[in-house]
Length: 396
Image 1 (cartoon, rainbow, N blue to C red):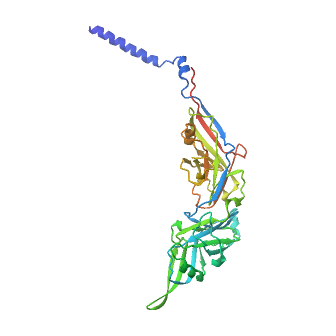
Image 2: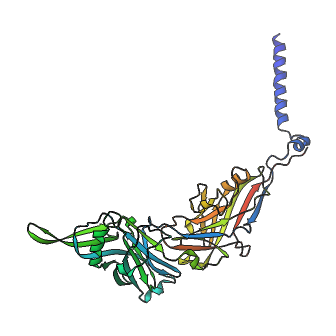
């Protein structure tokens, strides 16, 4: 009986060994015909942007959170400064009023030799005509409310003080002291450069725009003088001309700051369906220095958004609540790894409305970068380098 049991166990072990060996053998050819190639083929393709790409829109943007205040002229850009002060006294008699700004930088086209020749700008300071100030609504200068006129020089690298008309200041304090003062508006005449001053948002008290008032008062010991200093409660730079006055070449795409640009990029992915797997998708843009300003500075601030609605919708100027991608920059070429979005599109997770190109922190300073569009040579056009795996081959 024991011998019989041992024989049965031995036969069982031999059967397992044989079955194990059989698993390592190649599957019959018929299996491949039925199941197919599970991995498919790895392939690549370059997709050029569709003819619909190349559209862009521009508008002046809110700059009230910028640490820069731009005043003057840079090529076709003309910028003024709005300063607002709140909770000013309405019972004092001002005998001296001074506005002080701190120089941060200076901007002009060309290389550093431009500054070998001193440049000037005449600055006019007005009482602003309204509190309803915004990027599309700069104040209107009124000579009846001119507080000061002064020339500034490009080689002035420290604080600049402007003596204000005390008669107007006293009238202003007594008639507009409700806590919502209209503030000051600064413009230039025949400016040869653009001065950059520190804004309140620099958060350095010695640099912030401020107004100093010296006034008379009387107490039990007689007439005296005292000083009050007020920092701005709101400040911003505003470009005077609408973007259409820039006369830009429509054959390029743009992104910008100060004057913001939103550009549209579209790619036809209709040949790919849900059975394809995207291994990698790289979007490439090439910048053009001749149509950019400030030597195409800030290219690394480019952002690509997956659009959530068709180009031209009212939501264009709202921050898209979608995936965004930052670039890798090498000379004039920007590349964006957009693999997740392309995979989501062909998986039908999202509808393909294309991409929107814009700058990060559009309200911080002045910048504009031009990119080649669909009107350029194919080597320079916006394109996607697509690396993907084809669907499995099923044969029945």
